[in-house]
Length: 217
Length: 217
Image 1 (cartoon, helix red, strand yellow):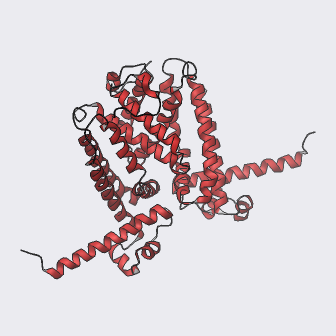
Image 2 (cartoon, each protein chain N blue to C red; image 1 turned 90 degrees about the vertical axis):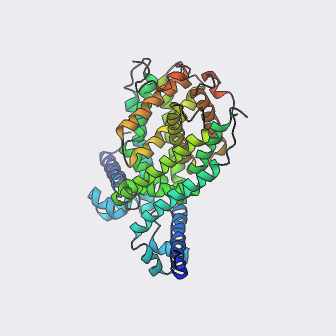
Image 3 (cartoon, one colour; image 1 turned 60 degrees about the vertical axis):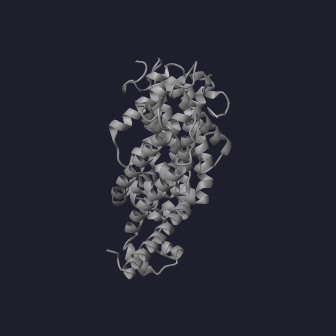
């Protein structure tokens, strides 16, 4: 039975407003940081009445919890779209490193980082964040393995190599966040791609540092 | 010519008060986070008059900038003391990984992380933090290379392996900060120690995942 037109429109409108509020929250986290992300600031950015914000999110805490799922959804969606564009071939492992790097240096990642660090000293935020981040990691790992395809998908080393890659690129993103040095950062990325090939048994160890090039075409 | 007794005492007292204020600031960053680290909060923890705090640090911004050098000094000092205890032998590379891990999961690291993330959206804090972090990284790399000794010190791959290790362990520390899973975390560390041996050409790639043990005694 079709949903009456007027009711669907109301639900749609509600969803649009909610998305607009959460989009403004993410933008505020990115540009101003966690401490400055208040209901007033979000209200101003979203161009909505305070009552409208509070109807959807009665407290600042509720708003920040809402932002968590919104950010996780955006990251998964974007990653899925980009992963679909990776072409088959021997350069696939390197292409996945690039995908991870784009995620871990995206505006959405830096907005999420604000919540992640704040959650260390905020038990309520942490309780909301931990399951959502588990959902993110599970989705991403599945996408990485799927993008790599065989023989990697069934290679028991791949999970470890994915874990290494995500951890290493997270650290590199943080280290270069405040004072970007594109050259040094690109060299680390190129070397990590070589290191992955060494760890997967595709290259001998001695070739690890032979110039900044990548493996494969 | 000896400094008059009364003047030295005053300088000493000044340094002690300053260290006490900065210690309380670090403690507050660790326990309450960046947003809650205000002059009032630090004053209460340090048990000093507001005027005393403001004599040393006229603004909250000055206090946070002061905390940066204090945290960097603590990390270098502690690392130096621990590095001196590393015994010679084939397990040295693994011992350095453990040193890095202890630093990147120490209270001082998490206090510094608060400032690091806040500096992304605070230009003044960033300007003060970037040179201090450069000092930290330079000291640590020198200590890592010195601790490893020959033949590693003069191996051009060591810089890259140190960079990989610091970045990977930073990411792992962040990933496990909110929901510690000791078993999973220890497995990644043990595997990274094996991976380093593979990358240094000491182990064939296929042995990367042979159980959670470490290389060497």
